[in-house]
Image (cartoon, rainbow, N blue to C red; front, side):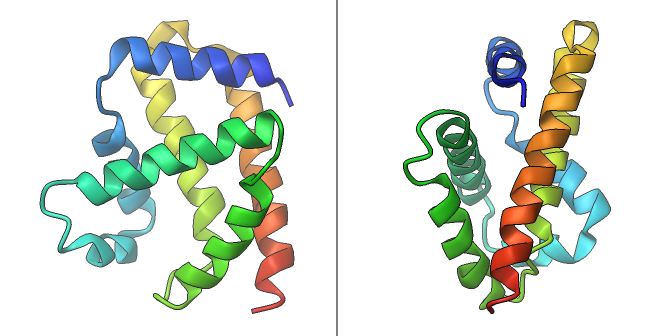
Amino acid sequence: MDKQAILDSLDLVAERSPDPAPQVYARLFARHPEMEALFVRDVTGDVRGQMLAQAVEVLLDYLGPRAFAVNLLRTEVHNHDNMGVPGETFPAFYRAMAEAFEAIGGRDWTPAMTAAWQEVAEAFGEIIAAEARTV
């Protein structure tokens, strides 16, 4: 996984968008409309923003020391399962992040960034699938 491509993509997004959450969730809800109903009480978008921030923290930890990322993903599979959110939503969320970030990055987005984000979604999908079998 090209760690630097991920970091560069996050820098690019940070430079161009003070709050990418609306774009990320618009893409997620377009592909998984059933998810939008789970956020009906989040009228300010604060919950979505917090969840996106946590997703970035998990990603950064996964790329670095891996002090908590894998365990947090495993825990969240169970937490979200209790709310009726299937485990496969996690990699879908990271794909929505990548697509939104690519749109924000525009012509400065690189193929290496796309490939690295695809690897993230696949790696997280494998972690989630392994844990989901225990649910």
